[in-house]
Length: 386
Image (tube, rainbow, N blue to C red; front, side, top):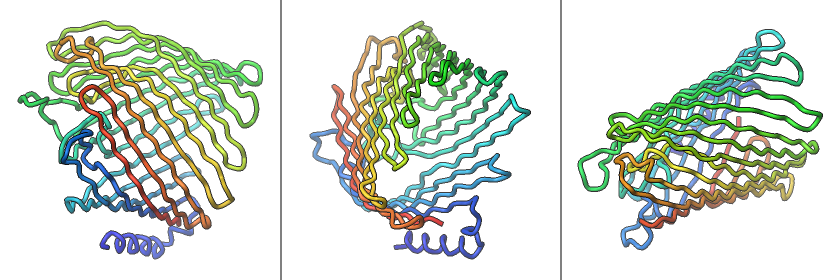
């Protein structure tokens, strides 16, 4: 009840300051009630799985300043869990800027800070393992002619876990915190009226905290975008990743693998959206025994307006992950494979531009040799826009 009162007081305070009259500032209050049948992500077949109801209250702020050159988005969330009467705080805040220097040079920058739940492959009983993330980026675009563009970007990615847990039953710690710096150069050319050709090179340097090791990658790939009509976009890319993994003892291993992806998006003015995306890539690992993993992802999204006010949307993600021995932090011949299925379906009713209600389901199913995990959430929510 105290969260509902907080929501009402927050909204009234916005009215008193006159913010709703500013078209450049959008305020959102989003209240949802969830039922979670495996709140601590315990393995299938165990007898101590716990379910719970929890209440989530989030506030959204979407603002634009200085003729839209600066944007601000913030989504703080208060989450109260019934099973242990615990209150958690999540959310994110981000800023973006865009400045033009003459007709040919554009500089973009962004920064995002967030506090989120742990990934599906991390399992711990009765421990709320979360992580803090900060991403800062800047990009310079130079367009010497209408058909040609050059972009250079830099990104700094910092990840810090709320708990540095022991590995297995030993005293050694996971040391999952890391800092990553990435540099990207893109050459783009418009060919004809329907093709965009890109050559992309990316270098990333990732170092884990402590003595866990590091992962450095050089990625080269080409991408072709095809726009057959005004409501369809098709993208395909292919290239190669050259990786260097450093284990806990400081030993370096070189590794190379192809990388590829495809994306198809179809949308109509009435609001129907169909999308497919796949990618094969090398990434850092949140599982303590490996510094590197390979991901093959398939994702489908769909959105359909049943009536002007009633909308059905869904998402399905199938992710296959391989942890190879060359990425093991202890230089052990130890490999692992797992599959994660994430799905959601939501039925939303938009009464008008201010009032919005929804009901839906979110599921996460993890399959691997060590343990299968099944987590299902059902929710009902109400959103109020200002």
